Image (cartoon, rainbow, N blue to C red; front, side):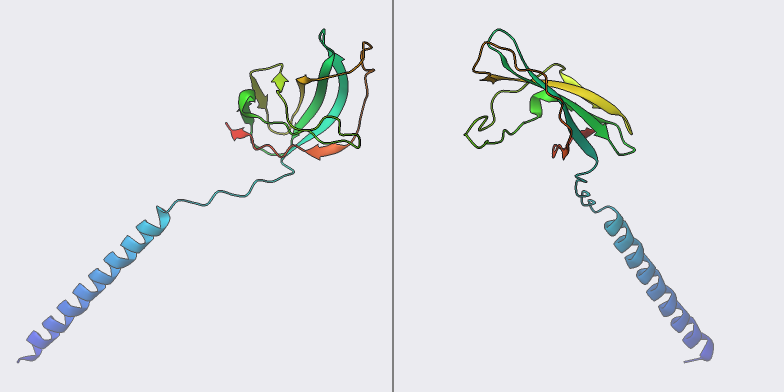
Length: 152
C-alpha cells in the first residue's frame, strides 16, 4: 500500500474517532444539563414571625392573634391562607391542645422581599372561658413560622 493511502486512511480514522468522541461529549453534556435540579432546602430563618398581640373577639370570645411576619430574603412570597396550618401547643394544664379551625382576615398573604406584614388570625374553636375579654397582651419572642410559602 502506498504511503499516501496509508496516511489518508489513518487521517480518516482519527477524524471519525474525534467526531464520535465529540458527539458523545455533546450528548453527555446535553443530558446532564437537562436533568431536574434538586430543590434547595428551606431556610428556616427566611421568614420569621413575632407574636405582637393576643386577645379575644366575637360573641363567644374566641382567641385572636396578631403576628408580625418578616421576610429576610430577596424574594417576594405569596400564599393562599386556606392551605396554611397552625399547630397548637399543649400547656401545663392541657389548654389549647391540638390544631383547630384557623380563620385569617385575608384570603391571600403577600410578603414582599425585606418587608414586614401584620397577619391577623382567629381560632374560633378556642373560646375564652369567661365573659371578660382577655386583656391585650404584648409578647416579644421571635419564632420561625416553619411554613413554606410559595414563591411568586
